[in-house]
Amino acid sequence: VVSGTANGYAAAPPQPSPTRGEGVKVPERARAYQRDLTREAHAFWGLNAPIADFAAQVQQESGWNANARSYVGAAGMTQFMPATARWMAQKHPDYLGNLDVYNPQWALRALVMYDVYLWNRVTPDTAFPAGTACDRMSMALSAYNGGEKFLIRDRLLASEKLLNPNRWFGHVETVNSGRGSRFWVENRGYPKRILQQLAPNYAAASWGKTCC
Image (cartoon, rainbow, N blue to C red):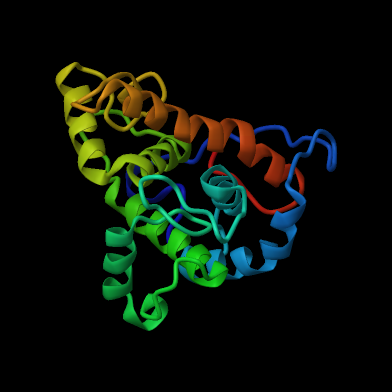
């Protein structure tokens, strides 16, 4: 079980909630999976799970299409690459051993479990002021999209430039430790679209909380 205040990351300040149903843009096909995603999020993240963020991530990855496949080989509703899917199945055989990226239940469970893993790996640099839960989720999402190794290198480069490696927006997001320009732009847009554009819609539609 994890929370937004663990390991030196402060909770994001409370934001005013939009009126229910006002400006909400949740795809109709998503509603069929709300209960499944909620169950997996509570089981593997805890009752304080940012379900709106997970839902927004699924929308960003596949538009809730269980049969989605990208030109680079990512597959299923949560667009796992084959190597990552195999690694997750081997790491968690009791929960993901029946590997099937096109199975929505497998895909949603794997997304939550991988997000938990990445969230826990974003440990704070105690030489710098703490970031927020929003910063931490942004970095977990960056790692999901572009690889944890790049995130580690980005954070190290940020600290070398006297930027705060615990803060994403305006700090880690501004540096590039070696990605090609196209992939860097895509990776920086990934957390922003999920957390700032899509997740508020799910929160407003009563799917649960968002880290931001």
